[in-house]
Image 1 (cartoon, helix red, strand yellow):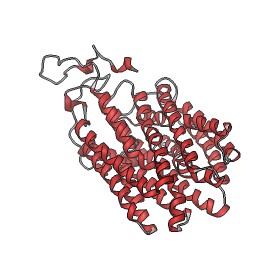
Image 2 (cartoon, one colour):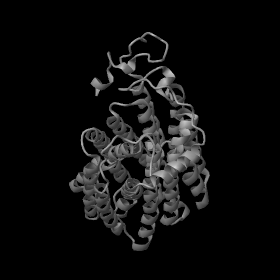
Image 3 (cartoon, one colour):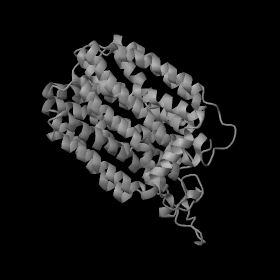
Image 4 (tube, helix red, strand yellow):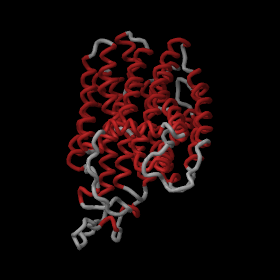
Length: 442
């Protein structure tokens, strides 16, 4: 990778502004990598909150006597808004700039996490967790990564997509064990404050180091030619809806959205939300279950980056089919692996599942780019919305199923069957035979 970022003759390191007639001093590391690093740290800060819901279901149920369905509804609202905000956030970044949108988003996450410390009613949980945090994290969703990657990189897009996608897992790796320890020793409120502070700490880095476009610093994107910064797009919401309407007229959009909805259902909605309480049902300590999720984060980083590398080289449709099929098989075995202690088969599941956690993102984003060209970031935002709607449904229905059946077994089996459907949907996407479209067509 160091060989990719070290540049002595890369044209992108030169001043391409019209009329300069000379080269700027050569840069050893292209500015795009600094922007990618800031994006990585930002996603980690914003993803800190995603470590909390699974840890707090039991403490909130015990303290306030809210049903798991009620708590799951708040989590599902957060996830749904996360997804539905993403496509509009991509358009707002075109209109107002990446920096401004992300700073406001981080502030919203911090406000929601802090306000929840004083909540006493379930409707407040909906407002603080569901509304504020959902809008904030949605504005820093994968559409944020897609926008940064599309503007700053021409070469190595698959690899960079994998790295930025892994940032969410990195946040999980850092914050899950920490928050689990805080909840176990000091209660859920200090954990919520910790998440708020993590979001606020990132704000100065974004404001000082992030730039909206390579042209802001007189550079071409990494591996490409200089392009003047476009005029800020007006009518961001109108454009976002137009892109959805146009994309909805194409078959690949529905296949991508449907398979990605199942991806969200089987990861954020299922494992991230319900794994810890499910393991606790089998008398596994919360800290042990949270540590297993953190281990998923370790292998998620490896799997996602490797998936980005594979996406640059192989058919994205077949990669998706393999990922979903393997995920479905692993979920079918999970109910028999749940025990009070962590045994080797469970460790194997965690490693296997971690490698596949969001490995689906690079090939899904690649297919969006291939099909929808300049509108791909907004299209991917809508595909991500379907991901989060799927996650939201399972976050809620999983809690209801637990209240009704007394266990999560049926949820794991149903998710495994859904993953098999997602694998078939990926194979149904037709390959492009011509160049990528610049704009959407029916």
